Length: 154
Image (cartoon, rainbow, N blue to C red; front, side, top):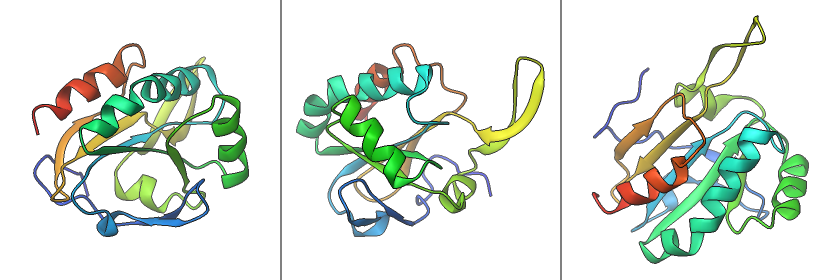
């Protein structure tokens, strides 16, 4: 299923770096930024995470929370979070359930090789649980800033 703007964001339960299980439908009265990224501690993913981190306090003031999601383990996420002092939580989807539900698993190519992987994507979900905006095949530079600016349009 292809997600579209104004549709209800699919619910999920995933383990978080805060030690809890995050269930999307249980988060009330907040906007949510879900950014899906390929791998902890790789150049693009690090830059993207650090950019969201820099804006995190301003994002929080707009009643919005950020979650990074990849298929890395919680252990990997905890190291990544600690290394870059990330102030938001990372969710682990090792079985690719949510990654596939959100339609961000697909063919990629790198250095001429084709393989399946996470297509860097971000979903902005409004406080009523509906998808407000989708960014696909994200270019990391200034992406977090664009997402932050879009919060004002919810």
